[in-house]
Structures are given as C-alpha cells and as structure tokens.
Image (cartoon, rainbow, N blue to C red; front, side, top):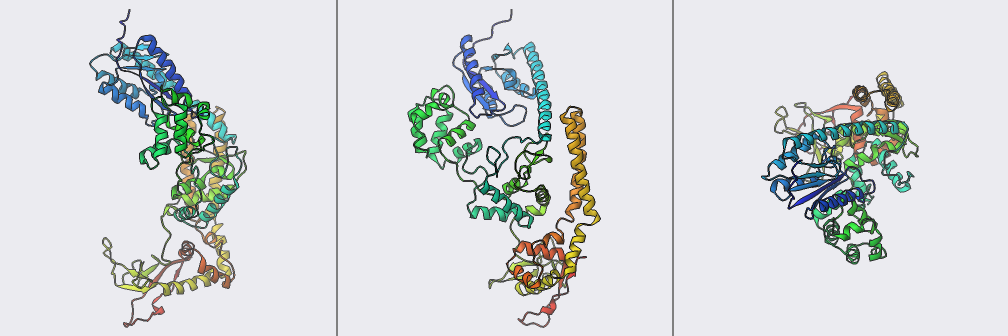
Length: 570
C-alpha cells in the first residue's frame, strides 16, 4: 500500500480554461468549486486560489497565475497543489519540468492532486514517470485537437462563414453600420490616393472619429486602468471585483455609481441578478479581467477614448470582411490572411479595392510617417557634385533647396542653394503642361496594361484558384496537413514575387493621374489645392531628375536659367 501523502499547511488550487466564450469565468469557477471540495475531503486547510481564464496552455501565451504559483512553490509559500486535471496545469512537457524543478527545490514533499487522475507523489521516481507519461498524453491530445480545429476552420473558411465579429463597419448581427461604413470608404479612397496612414490617422483624431472598440472595455484596458490609476473610482471597482473579499451588493452598487455607472442600473438588486455577482460578493474568489470588463460595460461605465494610429488605420482598412470575403491564415494569429471565399454578408468595399489597398499598404513607402514638405526634394541634383538636394526652411519663413554637406556623405560639396517657391512654381508649370497632353494619358494606360502587369495579375489569379481548390480538398480530409503546408508556402513565395512585380506598375502614371482633370485650366486649378504627397507622387512618376546650375555673378535676384531641363521618365 502506497504511503499516505502528508497534509500540506499552505495548499493551492490552480484552475484554467482555454476559451471563455461568455467572459463570465464559469468554467474556472466550476473547477475551483470541485477542487475546494476535494481539499475538504482530504482534510487540507483552506487553499489559495490561482486561476488563468481564457488562456490556452499550448499557445505559449504567458499565464500570470501559473507563473506566480511556481514562484510561490519555490519560495515555500505553497506546499500542496490541487487541480481538476493535469492538462489544466500543463499541455507541454516543458511545463511539467518547470513544476518538477519547483517542487524538487523544497526539502519536504509537495503533494499534487488531480481530480481526474488521483494523487501523484512527484518527489518519487515512479511519480515523476507517471506525470511525464500523462503530460505526453495531454500534449498529444492537444495536437490532435489542434489539427481537428484547423480542418474545421479551413472548411468554414471555404464555405464563407465568418470566424467571429466582422469588425469595424459591422454590428454583432453582421449588418452594416452606416456611419462607420462611410469612414471605411473615406479611408480606403485616401489610401488609394496616396495619402499616408499617419496623416489619415491624425485627421480622424482631429475630427473626433471613434476608433474600433473606442470606449469599450477589454481585459487589456482593465489592466491599463489599474496601472495608470488616473480614474481612482474605476480602479476601486476593479480591485473590489478582483480580490478575495466579501463585498455586499449595496456596497458594490455604490462603487459602480461613484465610478460613473448608470444610476438606474447600479442598484443592489441589479448587482445581485448579474452572473458574476456570486463570485464578487462571496469572498471565495474574485473574477478575472475579462469579466471585470464586461461588468464595467454592463454598468454603463465607458473606457477612455482610444486614438487612431497608422497601425490601426492600416489594420482596419485591409480586412477581407470589408469586401465581403472570408480570409484565412492557418497556423497564424493576428494579421490578415488569404481571401479564400465570398462571405454571406454585405460588402462595404469591392474586392478589387481591398486587393489594391493590401498591395499599397504592403509597400514600405506606405508606412512612412509625416507627409512630405518639399515638392522637389531629392529630385533636384547639385550641378557641382551631382548629389541630391534637400529642402530646408529659411529665416524669413520661406524655404530653399540645398546641397547639404553631411557626415557620412563625403562626396557632397555643400556649396549650392536655390530658392524653393520659385523653383517649385517653374517645375510645376512644366508638369502641368505634360499632364495636359492627351498622348501622355494614353501612354499611361498602355504602360499599366503592359505584358508584365498582365502576367503578374494572371499569376495572382491562378494562385487564388489553386488555394480555393486545394483548400476544399484539405477541408474535406483528402489532403494531409503537411501537404497543405508545403503547398501554402510555395504559393506564398509565388504571390510575393508576383505582387512585387505588380508593384512596379502600381504607382503608375495612370494611377497617380486618376483624379487629375483633363483640361489644362482645370489642371492648374487642381494643382494649387492638391495635397503635397499627391503632387510629389506625380512629379516623381514623370521626372527622374533636374540639375540645378551654380549661381552666376553674385546678386539677390532669382535666376530661372539655373534650372535645367527635366530628365523625363520613359
């Protein structure tokens, strides 16, 4: 008969659930209740609770309570562990080894009890062997489950079924939100027009346009609110919900009202009716941050306003759901995947627009920060040394172009400048003259529809066809996971190469002239009001360089003869 494990003086319960669809931590609470009952039956003292809600052990994502449990075992603050099942504590063998290291650091045995596997004495060789076998079985179960879920998700993607909310522009019932759809269309057009993501974000913030999820709580915002502590009444609610202490419904309702909750809602009777009430008021165990976020929202307490940044403008406007297509990226978290199948919801943008936006925002140039200030920077070349000239402000409020001698650029002479406004005006008129010529427009169309662009577009279309065909085979189980991964890697390489080639035509003259009028008088008017980035894009597309000659006899008058003839691109 195996010796009875000693009774610990400071036991702990560890509970975890991988996916909490309701955010109410009910799965964790059930585990804790059963584990607490087992502690009583074993005659153990009241245990300390450690729990991680909505965190997968396989994902590699940090589990704060698990890490704290290991630290407390090593420090001697915990000398016994109870969990509902081994796979609640770990899904990877490496996690078991960390638990073993923590336990072996103690002088006396640390009993470990799993409700679904019994007691395991990890201080003995046979106990450690049994634990390693169970850990390997748990890891295999995780792998099998992951493969099954991958196949299910691939099948759902091929069928065009949405995976979760559609995001900005749609409500929870997949209906278009008119005001947000207008923002989507505006942002899409501005991206196509060549405006930077930075300037779009700044404008949306200036106008007070709400970001996706603005004012709504989530676990990260709860944690951030506690860290910043600039809303002490809200922090008081969060800490009351988190801690293991008895809080009456009346007291908690008063805390909610002080934090800005809706008075008509935040009453003792309302609090008692909430699904999280028992866990908040009982003192047995507080709730996790996901549940705190839900209760704050339900009480009418808004999170701080969030702001647009270039990154979330890019993420918002690239989404496949906006064009009514399901995207899929197996094995990847975050980011945006391949457009694999039409969805069953109404689109806000066309698929062609979404694909163009993805190509544009994939270019490093689309991630530049502020809009350019100078029309001809780097286009003008120094007539002395041939270096590019940069724009810079002058003391009288104007600007100039100069060959600037800088560290690391020994070949620059630094001895040539020219007035900026006058140079811009002369070059601009030359550009307007060229843009007004009909043959330039027709040449632009021929360039865009050239053999290289057509071949690249055909390659992308063929890759999409292959993905759809073999994706259906994979979803139906006729293609092995390894075969599917090899095919996808090959397609990804081919697509990147095709998109790179297509990108050589993407900033084409046809594209940059799409909004420009055709009559010369109208072009002149348009040019004076067009954004600097758009005008500069046209100039760079048309002109390779312009040489600026050195100054003649010293005088203060502007000499337009110093501006050489533009080197026009073919």
